[in-house]
Amino acid sequence: YFGSVKDERGQLLAEVTVLLDTADASRVFVTDANGRFRGHLPLNIPMSAVTASCAKVGYVLDSVKKRPGPSAGRASVQVDCVLRRTS
Image 1: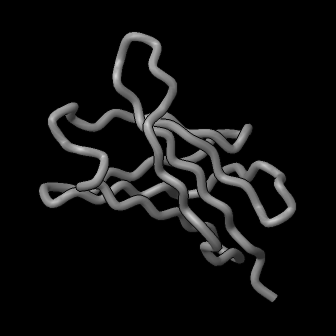
Image 2 (image 1 turned 135 degrees about the vertical axis):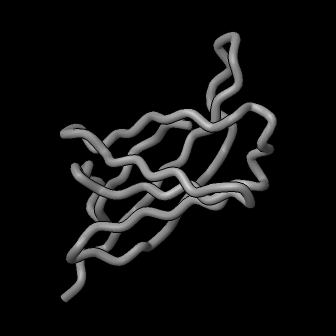
C-alpha cells in the first residue's frame, strides 16, 4: 500500500495519519515531508476488505480513493486522500 494526502488546493500534506482497517487488524502509517506514505499488508487480504481513512488536526476528510497500483511485477494498492481545512 502506498499513496499521498493532499489538501483541497492540491498541496501535499505531511504528518497525516493514514489508517488501513481490515477484519483482523488496523495498521497506522504517517505521511512523510512530501505528503506520501508506504506500508505493507499481507498479500492475502483483498483490496475490497481494506477500509482506508486519513486524519490530521485542523482538517476533515473530503475523499479517499483506493485503486490497484501500477503493475511492476508485484501487487500494490494506491490510496490517495484529500483533506479540507476546518474553519
